[in-house]
Length: 323
Image 1 (cartoon, rainbow, N blue to C red):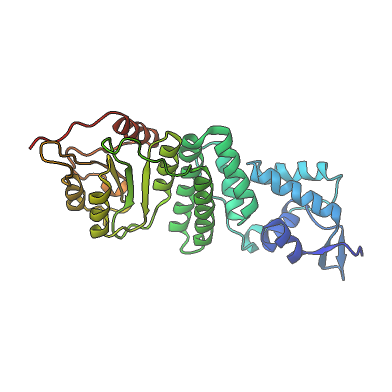
Image 2: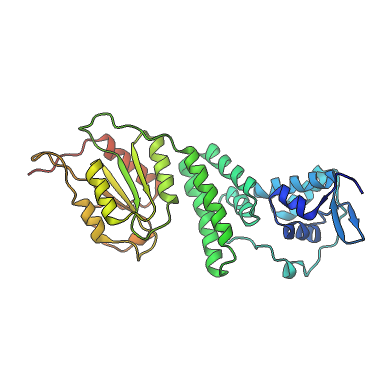
């Protein structure tokens, strides 16, 4: 037995996958160790490790596992002895199953597989590549959002089994978005339009969409003030009074948190001298506002629509309120 061989647990930690995943790949695809002690215990040699690293890279890129296994063994010089797949392996495996993605970009499949494996390095690489390849808007709308929605659907149908997947994926999406976020732009003309304030309504904890919007506005040079999750009504009102924002984005993902009275209160805020008073434009974001009547408030249907509308508000001087 080689002195450099690894146990299954040590290899799993090195690759960022679960030991169950390694055993499943061994049973299903013959991606197994060359050395076994006492006929049972697995010891993974450097060649075995190279095959597994290739397998992880390929599946993270969206290649189906069976195809990835064949390619990994070819790349690794045939390491591992092919075995007949165990028909009962799927029933015995405790690894999380695939996510219900539907018709999506190939990057979504790779990202989903990495997330289900809790393969943090692969998730990080996939997100970084998506943003660099497609830009922030496309990466958010067509890679991050569909994958996150698939995790949510799986979580809803599987009890609490997928909470850890959703948390890991959300954390790394937030990291990718903040890495893309530029330092806050300063206001030029103090008499011009103020920044865009982004806030979740009271009781709303989901901030990822606002983080994406904040990053997108930063790329356009629009000054923002990100207030984050569950901002109390009093604090939001105080911030609006102090900042005199051009717009306020209120995010509500759940219908129970979407408060039209609060939105109207923010929309009625005024500042400035008499005869030249201003008030903010209010934008309602999130599915919580669906079906709510909000005359005079913006309700974009897509991420890029929100970016365009807010950029226009900032660059086009809003007329003052008479009186």
